[in-house]
Length: 421
Ligand code: GAP
Image 1: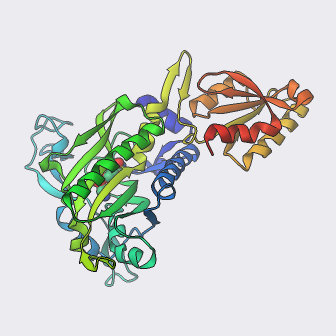
Image 2: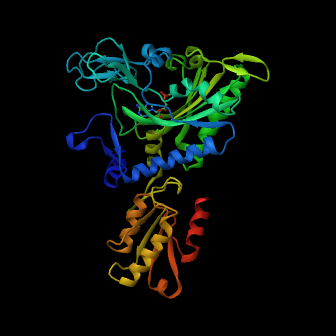
Image 3: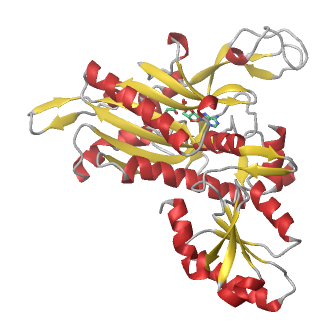
């Protein structure tokens, strides 16, 4: 964890939020490489959830909604964690995450647990008297439910169908920690899949999405042995869930949830007084919902942890090329040879429109390879003296360190084939 934290900062993946003012607990900023990693995760998710399917449409709802939404959804009442406070040092903790019943900071005794609501309040309005209390959304989900009617009326969807959404959510977590793992501001990628209110169909859909989501992480390179399902016990289920299974990752701080598959029944649509009219069958009913809810920050962290490898004296991030921030890096063999630099710039410009490409002319070639391995760049292209004769370049593979010569005019196709695009 220390190595990833240091790499994340040093190479521009993740910075502490508001760092120059001492930080702000639970808030993180993504640097130039972090934003690429997150965008790549989001793009792959959207592709598999929306573009590759005929029964799912997308949505982007507002973060701040009428506070009545959160009353109806049960969050004002029930979106709580049990909080205890140390009677000596007054530090606060989540009771369900503590072991031993004593304050972990000073060993003092703790108060009885009380319910602490995780919704983050905001005040909206232009005058002090007219300001209205609202909430930053605690889950992106409710924006989908309140637009259920809109989507049905404005598109051709028919049950069963899904609505996919990606966006920020906020929780006033009692204790944030483990880098971005538990943050107060984070991003979710969610699918709400609406089905007939029928046990067998709902169970089948639940199992389908459980497998589909697990396979998605594996298809993007996460090691199977670091992944598992964990069913929720009755007492830990969220207030909306009839059934819940987590996808967990074997993190350095223990098995940890980063996606939940939830059977929400008709809990939300009923509470918002929404129903579905099946015109063909001539009946109206409240659909049930199977939800897949993934965290982008946790996924990004676990993709980084899973990809991190040390081989002799080099560090390699073996990220799937689709997730890697840069797809290719281009170098002139020697930075002080004008014709090599000119030709390398030409190759760089040629590839730049199609892929996100890094340029590096510092230090020697070995150092440049090491620097690209450490940030997960799958291929490095070197323009050398032979290039000036025969218009070929060296392409070096991150994982095998093997090199091959590729003609410049075939380079784009070569990388497109490798990336499967
Ligand atoms: N709509 C259902 C829902 O929000 P959840 O299990 O509370 O379910 C889903 O959250 C995912 O959101 C989690 O698996 C996790 O990846 C991410 N998540 C939740 N709280 C988080 C936090 N404080 N920091 C980072 N990610 C978080």
